[in-house]
Image 1: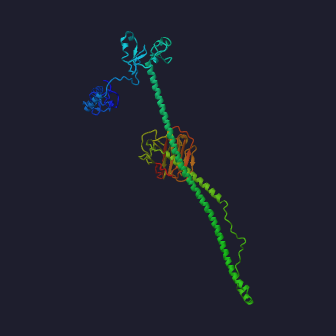
Image 2: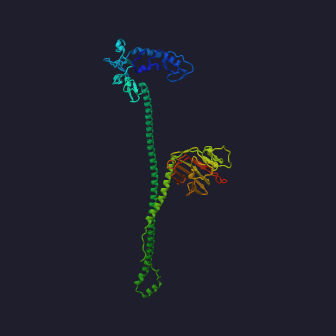
Length: 541
């Protein structure tokens, strides 16, 4: 049937199957409306009865009833909208070249006249004998571009050699020996090629979008990393300023104490002098009256009773020397330098540990790799040495000589960090190993054989280098942190509780996956029975 003018209302009264205005509209159990004929025909062609819109499947074929409301509104819509053939040419349609004023849609194009005709203007070609011989084809726009310039014939072939469109006459002249195919065949080839090119372009676009996201994420990460470094640096400088202030206060206190000592010395001398002055004044009070008496007898008798004065002190050499501050400032600065160096090292290592702790990974122990005499916790976080060797199935991944166990997780790139509690143990070793190490024994543990480990035995700490490296032990270790930068070839160990760096192995090239490894070693008649524990990272300032 004729289509009504396209509008919003028409969409509401169109069958989703035929796209025309409803005819005897019925409703399915799921609530959607269709023409009775359309939905019945649709179900006839389906194995299962389902709704064409929501795909709801019905166990039995419904018997849809007419939707009276939709039917009445559709009828009203037909009477309101004038249904007629539109004279205007829609976009994408070929217009009639003969029409004047409003152009109608062409129904045929003549390859002789090179003109497109609507149904009305095509009538002479269907009636006049001479025009009946003209070749009529489906409507084509730009007919002149579709004709061979040399032979004035339709371009309907494609020359593979020259890669150009040709007419039938061209294949008998200039392109006589060239392979040619119909345009449709070459069109399908080129369409497929364009589809491939489009897919490749889209893939490259997606790759570049991902690269943009990767760069933006890296920039954001760098910003956060920079903020963290600034915060850590702020803490370091604050601590260093406290050291400087303490050194300044100690220096000031030293100077003040020396001044106070000098002042006390002066006060004691003044007190002694004042005591001597008082004694001399008393002596003068006794001597002066006698020196003025005229009574000879009295003077002689009184003179005999005068007490001898204490021997006078020679004050000519006595002086209050100013306190000497020579070297005080230099000694304070030297002490400050030593303190700052120690504090900076301590703060730097603490900041370094805090930074690598950001790369914490959650690892659990793999029982399939554990030596038969090791006992693992259910959560895979603890391991200790057992008294009896368990009967376990043969497994090439299991350690049979060293009492070791690997984690389930391995790492082939980037950075990772984990911590292991070694508290109350007298011997142990831990670190990382490459995947294809010899697990049946007979091989010395070293970096050459794929072991980057730290071991503790008889109060000695050793790294498995070549040769082995004895590492200074500051205090009893409680927890060891292990950091690996796979791409940089770096393995570092930290004393977590003291927040100091223990040892770093650098300059390696890793080519295999790396696995964290734990070895609690033998229990030593109960002295080494404590477990090794993989602990969560607790970042503290």
